[in-house]
Length: 241
Image (cartoon, rainbow, N blue to C red; front, side):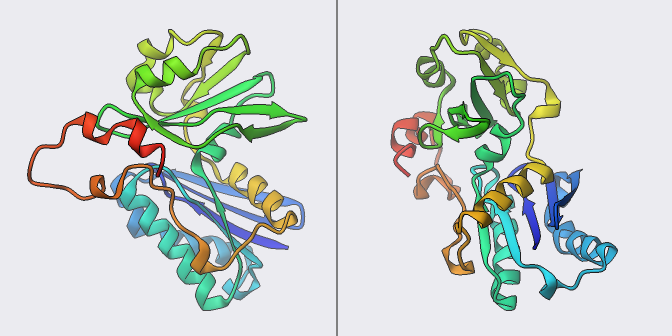
């Protein structure tokens, strides 16, 4: 079985490939150059492996939440490849990828990603028989709202780029350890591990069934000329998206 997957939800472009028990990954801080390197990098990687595109059995892609533009470009690339080759696609929520970074000692994991406008994307996960399981929906909320939801006696690992912005606030979280930058971003290795599990469970779909995870309401994904306040983008509405 051969799998190729990418995640473009952050400034880091991550790519992973899998073949017969072996995982290889490529992670690059691409910044604003992301859209220009996706197809070129895929071409170089499969060429180095001696693959043809049609040799790939599954495509995988990170669904977000994250960068609106990055997600659209990455998901569209994978959907185009899968559709043209008639191959199945596996969609992996990006917060699931981040949660998989957590060390084994953590009983609970909370990935937190900067969502701009004073908000964060977050999820709550628990470790169950060695697997990281999400316990509720992905959320878009303020830091104060996250802190109210996070009170617990369990050892909690917090990771994600929002730590860089809200470290002082997050230190108020009980029984929480803030992980360093090595744990803040998705990587191709975890993308492949989750894709392998999904393929084995029959969770792959077709290109038309893959959709990015956008937590902001639709009206907030458009830039208006008039000023929009952060509260208009509030977590209570967006959690229902």
